[in-house]
Amino acid sequence: MTVNILETLNQLITAGDVFFLVVMGVLVFLMQLGFAMLEGGQVRSKNVNNVMMKNMVDWLVGCVSWLLIGYILCTSINPQDFIAWWSKIFSATPFLENNGLELANWFFGLVFAATAATIVSGGVAERIKFSAYILLSILITAFIYPLFVYLGPWGANIVSWHDYAGSLIVHGLGGFLALGAIAALGPRKGRFKDGIPVPILGHNIPMAVFGAFALAIGWYGFNVGSALTLKDISGLVCATTTLAMAGGGIGALLVSKKDVLFTANGLIAGLVAICAGTDIVSPIGGLIIGLIAGAQVPLVYRLLENFKLDDVCGVVAVHGTAGVIGAILAGILGMPSLGGVGDVNIVNQIIASIVCIVYGTVLGYVLAKIVGLITGGLRVSEEEEEIGLDIAEHKLPAYPEEESM
Image (cartoon, rainbow, N blue to C red; front, side, top):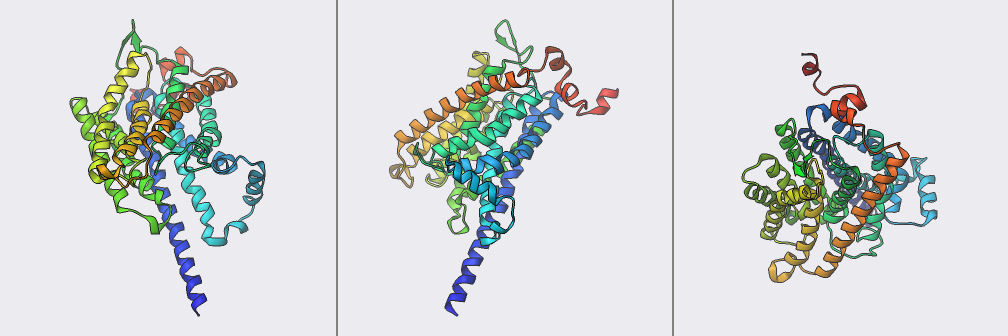
């Protein structure tokens, strides 16, 4: 009788964990919608369909590359582990045990990988070839992101740091991959004139703000879901996530002098920054992290402009530098003397940040150049850029009524 009760209890616990991972994973999947809207609002109307298509196909190809390669590469480089996994995925039977918990973990990992790949889309918008971008996305999901996971605390822990929900592992990597690709790609036509930056305004700021809020909703799956099991779920994580979001928006609002788009992006930067230390800092610590991460968004965006780098959606500041700030501040505000839980080495956080910057930027640049060679060019032609990628790549305008007037 006692044995049967324990078995039933264990089954219920496992089923609860599967349900938890699936629901949290679906919330993170909602972030694909958020990215599509945030990026779609920040590009010109002639490129909206292209941005939406990139976000859709990111997910579609990511599902396949994560199934075949990425998921296993996160934890192993042993060929035998890949062979064992490939032999399993052709049958449903191996996954019936434990309510399919292994596949629930696979799904939760997938939504994180897709996020890392999608970040790049916003930085290279309006001038990259669709075929080149999709190949770049596949390589990120299958190899680049999983290898970085393998190096860090979620994998083999070769480079050890604290990163509860991925300030560096997901967002920092995505942001600096974008930086490398942006440098390889070059700016949009007309973005700089005689070395002076010329603003190219997005077509729908309300769409971008809607996307930012959709991302914020999904972020609770990102951070709270990183507990991975119901028994480890944390109200502290929920609170620090919320306060960092508020701090990010406030910081960007103040520094940008009430700019709507910077405020929306600052809100996201606060969420990016808190991922690393969301489980170890105090609520006030979360607010401080958000304020700093949000405040730096307009500053870093303008700094990149000075270097003639055309980051269309500001992803380097929102994800790259915000991720680094979050990782380092987790090591500071995570100290018990500052209200944190402790057990975080600030030196390790700094080393990991440097590794992330170098790994992401170098590989982003090299991969973009290689992909350009494979696909017959990284950029669309000047004529295609002029008419817009919606027509040049997809033969369909986002707003047909306007085209017919």
